[in-house]
Amino acid sequence: MRGRISILHLERALILFPLLVIVWMTGCGEEEKTEPVYLIDYTSEGIPGSSLKVWFSGEVISVRFNGQPARRIYYDEEKGLWTAEWKLPDKDELARSGMRINGYISVYVEWTDEMGGTRHEWIILPCGCCSWPEVLRTIPMDRAEVDAEEINRKGIIVVFSEPISLKISGDVFVLRNSSGKRLKWEVWWSSDNSIAILKPKEGMELKPGEKYTLTIKDYFDPAGNEGVEVKVAFTTKPI
Image (cartoon, rainbow, N blue to C red; front, side, top):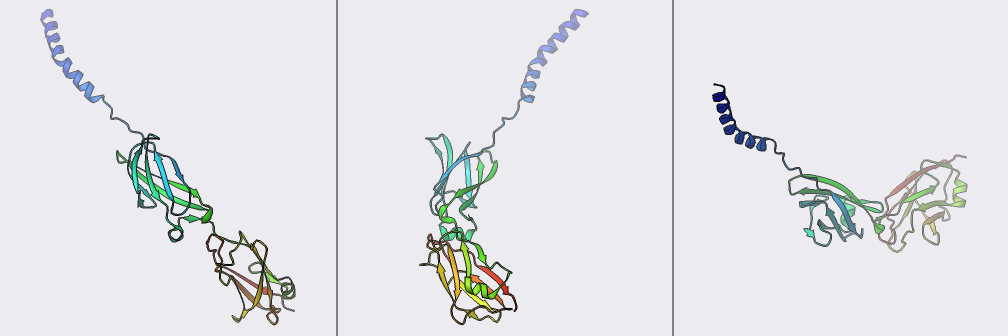
């Protein structure tokens, strides 16, 4: 009896063993894990209208730069990496798009890998011709109260962040009194055109107890970048 039971159990074991092996092999198999694809390098001259090239750690099927599709996606045989190319906008497009930070170009890169995974990253490119002139300091300062006679004698001083091109700049300084009348003041520039001194013509001097507004606008650097309009409001002390 014992022998029959042992033989019966053995027969069942021989039948079930292949099934158990199949179940174990199927159930214990793990899905193949894929590493995310990263942006690992890029190159560009940083000049508006020039090329931007980026490299990835794996295959990519779609790449967008600031929402625009890449001009070309291909496998770089020399580097052994997938790469995408895009043309940077020209200066006018940069100004309209808001991509330009003073002295830099910002690019938002989005990509999709072959498994459908998506990632994104910001690239900030130095751009020497993308900086625009700024008003660093004025004398008098905005909302200051000053002595009219002293300003008439020493002049209004405006300091810029870089030289200003007098060839392409317009009527940079407009000084008006509280009634809106424009005062004609002469402008003297430093040797490098980064500092301007305004002095009154005869009969156009500041008067005590008045409010004045100096508007600084339509000024450009030698590269053609326009500065932001600035208004400086100040008052003169009463007698």
